[in-house]
Length: 513
Image 1: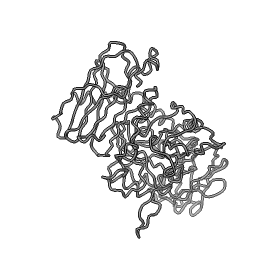
Image 2: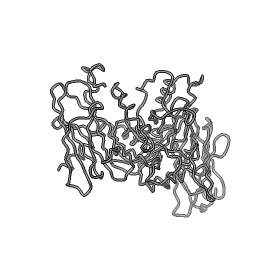
Image 3: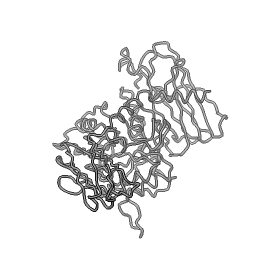
Image 4: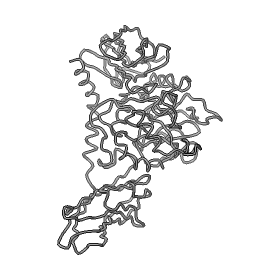
């Protein structure tokens, strides 16, 4: 019963997310429907079906169906823009998409000119007395946001709420990722090699984030149907002279020239990122910045509006160097009232790196509770803070953390309202951790006094910790660290927020250090 109750409470996490996803899917009706007939007299000809494309599009997608297959009718499919042939698939595809940065294999990515486009139907076979009826649906996408694409392009790879494991930061040959060629030379590494490494690691999703590049999206469009258990999230690392940021969930062009007349200040950059609708995460903010890695640290020359940011890469590369952990930087933002999700990323540049080494694919792993395995759902889970970081990138290490006021239970990323004097029960549990590991509950970044116990109810090593806390009516946050017997960080949890949006709470009264 306790397990069922816990699962039910997790489902409640998405009471606000599921309707939004459903609404997005429900809006995916075609902009145009083209119907027509191909007759036996048109055998061995080409039929052009024109339609008008408005200005300002990022993507055109078509789906295609026709009758008469049982009578050996075959109609091939292509697409012409006002200037040139954009697609020719023969008869092996029933859906085509072309965008500025990516396209279905057999199609060319590039600009989407307004004007008269034509669906090109080749007729290799139709019997003299047969009439074949075709239906073509045309979808127009005006942004590069994955959530705005037609539903057929963003169907979940797996349905149902679950904890999904992934890597949010990795590089391929489309920037500075390298791997050995057949003769052993280090060459720009194909996207395929990185994706295969993620499959071997057992991940559910990855974001390929080449530096300021969008060319990798075309390879991802080709690979996604083949890798139908691993979600490929479009991303890029916005690389500037004053810091790096991941932009996740859009293929739209983004001007990264911070400090130029094009993008004068960091807040101009952040506002432009926010306008795309994508998720923005600051990468490795505590890394040193200099000639060895210029711009790697977060050093904007002007004040930063952190309300424009969604997440912080708190663990980068999974190594033992404290500079790769930005926990203190993140907690300072929390204590200033900014609600930012902690994530991790391998920052992998060499997909052949053994999985037991730092910065290998999936080390660290970001674990996200999401409504399903799709880009909109994974990013919604990150925005909501339903996330923990598995520093070593295991396949089975888990973390649970709840705060309860009676029957009102909050999980990582949630908020509770607690007037002065309210009793709050905090409970954390981790599984598949080494014997002698320690669970620590933090209040505003400070360790709390907790009671711990070893949980022998499971076959895996498990530890649990709990604490009682009396509300003072002010703003606070609570989260969990799990460290191994040698003191190394194993799991890092996101906060549960207390009185965060209550009008009676001021920043001055919050739990700042």
